[in-house]
Image (cartoon, rainbow, N blue to C red; front, side, top):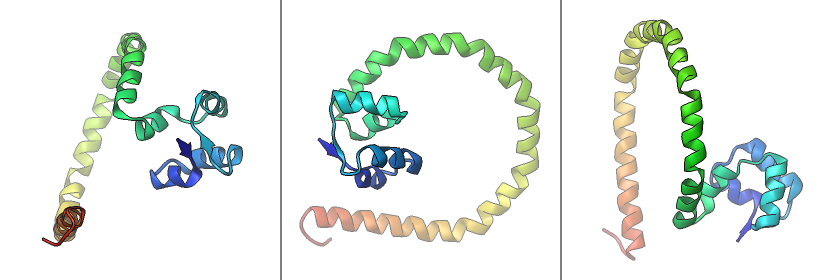
Length: 137
């Protein structure tokens, strides 16, 4: 598979990552082990790439391979996470209390626009399905 900067942009890659990619491979690159090793050295986010571009079976293999390391990380950081939550609980509760009324007003102010947007999305999905089936509704 050949990947280009435009393909990354089309899939909403971070622009700083696209810039690094494009400096190294202005005309794109064929995905392979050499390119992957270079991408690691460049600091590119290969996990995002894998999740975005790899077939589901390859992504599943990746997740299986990292599961033990993720479990070790979770175990090693559990105490620190718990301490962080304990230290920030009061501030989080105060923040939620302080912003609750504003969120209610926001929801009221945007409800009509949200409803119109949701209607347009639904119509667009129906139209796309109809087009994919080769005709109109």
